[in-house]
Length: 84
Image (cartoon, rainbow, N blue to C red):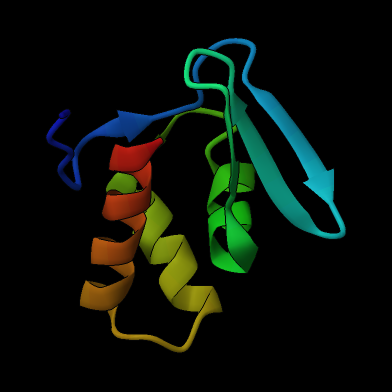
């Protein structure tokens, strides 16, 4: 598993299979034959990483938009990005 830090830069892999379904991003893994719903926060993160972004900048941006502790946002974002 990839270890991410606040200094890591992330972006989606080329040609991801993604669709917006009623405001939620759904990703499909062709290799695994599975679909993943990202939920509201995950869908927002997906939109924000369409261009390469440092995780520290992503967390700062999310912290300005969501009422949660920065440590919680950092942990949740890095957990999701590690899974992606």
